[in-house]
Image 1: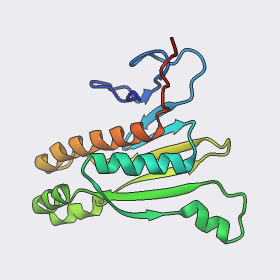
Image 2 (image 1 turned 180 degrees about the vertical axis):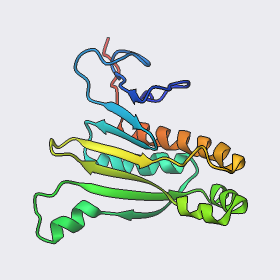
Image 3 (image 1 turned 120 degrees about the vertical axis):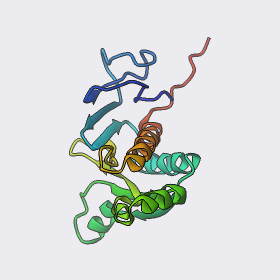
Image 4 (image 1 turned 90 degrees about the vertical axis):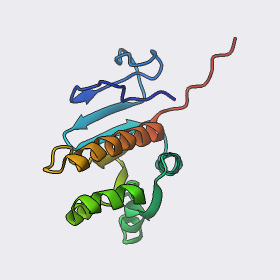
Length: 171
């Protein structure tokens, strides 16, 4: 797997090819794209919703966050009689050290906790993962610094979950 978010990437739209090498722009057919739009980041991949959620959960743990909840929105809507409703889930996660630091700065910053990533299916059956990023320009410089770190990790978590596995070429 390679990351879709490289160091120093600052464009508002990022499209990276997994097969053309690190940070090469998409030129032909690709299975993944990423879009950053202000505080929202979404990536589309060629994996199933379940695969993306399971990979998210693994990456969340590897980044020292704890999963504190999961809402199966798509499943709940289908149970209420909308059999064709697509997959949709929200994974909630938190790192208690970050939460403590944020609340020590200002107790109202708990409004940004826990972090969450949504996984959803679009009208074409593609699976997306997206998150609202923490604000990086508040009146609290210590929180802004922490938000930069947390947002970087959220991008890495999403990237890991939607990135297709690149099989080694056989000799």
